[in-house]
Image (cartoon, rainbow, N blue to C red):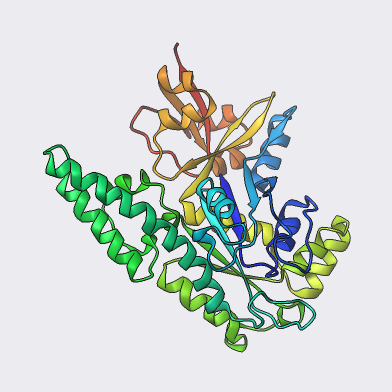
Length: 364
């Protein structure tokens, strides 16, 4: 899974990137500090892996991973190549979801690219540039499909859908706001439009606002209102505090979090929200050699889940022996779970569940 961290210059996106990846990306008080995208790969926290590692006395533990990409700041006119626009747009095309950092604090020492803090305006600036880029793309798709329809080789349904998308974009709304059936969604996915990508909004607040609720923070409320219209998620974080937490040793970090009333780190919240937004979950494999988490889309069937490990597992899939994580832990061993009838042998139609501990049987 690849997440692109975006935002206008000086909103705190590189600070957030540093906090979640501890990669030390340059963060400074001037536009275009991030030109080439910084990339950080982080482990997905999963307490189940530690428990299974002890249970199996495993030699190796391999968590699932997420790749974060810190993408260059954007300015008005990016869709026409202004600033670093073309690079910005090409980097966004490569990610699965967008983490949009929005500045929700006042600080005269930190220059805002528009001279004044305004979350709604900032969000609209980036959304509009992505919409304009998509409008250019959709115009080409419409021309191509119209010619095919005229020649008797195209699809009128697809052409109608393309025109519906164009109307949505012209109304300055992202394509992700459209309600599509499964067939339409599959077609639109193949268009690789920027505004189809799911978005997680991060409202970056001041350290002094951590104890406040949303009603006390009108700038955050602006972000939440836009997110609701798009059926998107909003996370409220102080990116500066999150970055400071990474500089502390584990004991100091927990004490500091307790003082501030922070239960989960920004990384943990972002990962949980990312999984929810993209409809992901993890299944587990366990043995003496390795305990490992594998990320799949909810609704994935057993053979396709096996294919995440190796394509041969999917091609030669016979069956999967599955025990629920909670049953395995409560009974103390795989053999005990088997004796109690808690290990199920499932076939090709089995839909994987979060926390399934799996042993795949295959023949190549």
